[in-house]
Amino acid sequence: MSMQILTKEDLHQFKTELFQELQTILPKDENLKLKRWLKTDEVKKLLKVSPGTLQTLRINGTLSYTKLGGIIYYDYDHIEKILRHNLQLATKPID
Image (cartoon, rainbow, N blue to C red; front, side):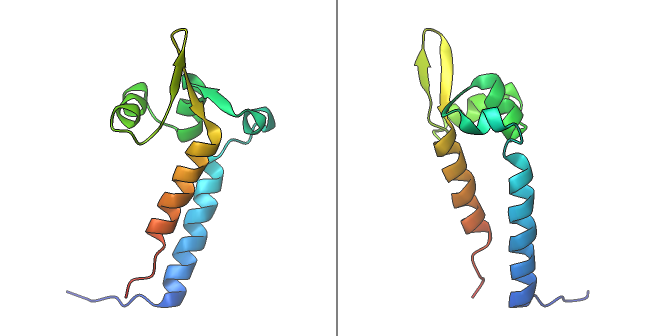
């Protein structure tokens, strides 16, 4: 069994690559970026998740939402905040 040693430079490179990947998740459609409130189909497309996964994220409180007249709306800023928070958790240095 071989052992690999991770350096701070390795972690920094991982952080950079992860951030670049997250940027590809964010919408490329400028109209989508300008909207504050997104509908379910837009969020599924943005996060590349199934309807069931999106429902799970609502149920367990990961994604906040509001419902108006049978249509569920999600706050784009909240989604972006969650992605950035999870990025920070993933890139914390290991002591």
